[in-house]
Length: 157
Image (cartoon, rainbow, N blue to C red):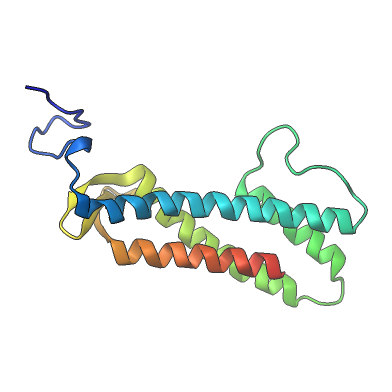
């Protein structure tokens, strides 16, 4: 009798191999959230590269180590400020985008670092204060859509 891999000592908790087909959409959405965030980072790096090239600078973004999202946003803000010296509307848009990104990043961290266990209609996570929060498929789908919107807004800056 094989016992699946349990990440907790409670033997009543599902093993990873026990997830049912109906859980597939939820598990897929978690993966899509992670992928959408990575695609956002890559879009931001590409945008910065475009701005650098337009200004005559051919350095690559993060030549040694991958820069953090905060560093990328700081660089974007700096380059847009140099490009649009008399027009602050792009900087206002960047500030709005950055607020949205921070909110989505907190949600992403909750999912990745706080996953607790599957529950009907979703799963529970523990936040930084150890409070349980129920996350459903609709909420995940909404955050994925928000990430895609943020990426499009970044490319338009």
